Image (tube, rainbow, N blue to C red; front, side, top):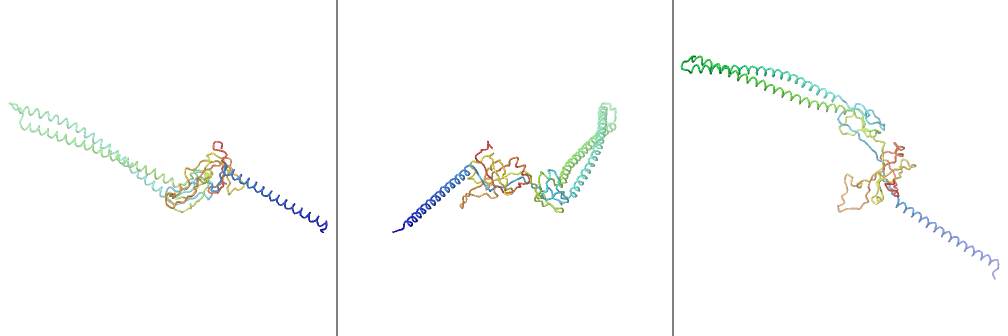
Length: 370
């Protein structure tokens, strides 16, 4: 027979085993329930995030970067700025050698002066020719009177000679006829002289007009030369900071050659969203940004605009989807995001073009509410 104490010990052990199993089962059930609740909450959170927020890390800070180049060829004589220096619009950045352009300006001015002297000479020649024309016209009038008198004398002598009683002799008639012929020749000569004087005036006037035209051309060349001289001064087109400077004294630069860049403080963010993320995006919606350079700060902004085409369409070589080896790729569309005024002022100089950011758009608020 089994001792009573042994029976009690076995019963207690079985009870302990049953209680332990129940506790294990309860813990397992509790763990499963907690896991299911956690999974449900996580799934709900992910669903909520997927439906009410759009996020991308394909986003970068952009800004106005102005390339400053030379407008003329020349040798750099002075450089007045340093790397990363702040400048204002209109500040002198550098100067080129001006000797060549100053010499050209002096040459053009000398040509203009010479032409002006020739115009003065032409004016004098015109006045002289007008005086000659006036004298020739006076002599022509005199010759016309003399011819008229000679003609009247010839007519009278012809009548006296043709009558029955010839009052004058044939020799006298011949003398009068000769005088008429001489008066006619003199008149023609003086008319030709007056015409020559008039033609001379026309020639000199035409020459003066040519000189005036040449002066206008030279004045245009002078204006261009003065502009070229002014272009030897390279000034800042905008206010900002100097970057990518390759300008050095003694270097010869060419027109259009980039010498430096000026970066303005105004920045914005370009976020490249997948085409599957565009649904729900509206202009004016609020945006939260996190910059890699400022990990502990949340930056606020708004959607300013959405690009009219995907980034691939603006590439140097857009993809030809009509080819036989087509592969479907999810495209990305640039979205411009501007910073709110407070953050834009506070982060001026801290957010720089090219920096990486993470963008989160709140879809619960539309553009009109934003």
